[in-house]
Image (tube, rainbow, N blue to C red; front, side):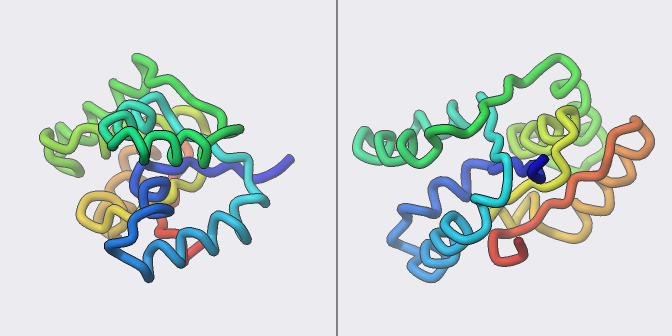
Length: 149
């Protein structure tokens, strides 16, 4: 059985973001060299966020994620995301960031890949998520950037 990984929207959009060429290059390298080793998951939340892109980008995004398993945000995931927000891990304004982590946690996905250094890929978030997940009997979710994979 292959390892499982959850991608947030920032990773998918970075594949085509020419404004950040180094990040785009690193994402493509991860996409081609590392991701084939994983069973890749995204969520309905990712699809909603991607739907806000321009028509041209939407087509690129949908092609890139073809074959990935799409997970729904369940009541259980919403409840866990609420907990993350209520204790201050994520600001309420960025609820979807909490939901990405909660969807990964409630589905037993041990790695979440993101370029979001503001709310996700930082040590404080990792530690606090691990604490809440332990208290709620979920496995930890390792939140990392593509080069760390």
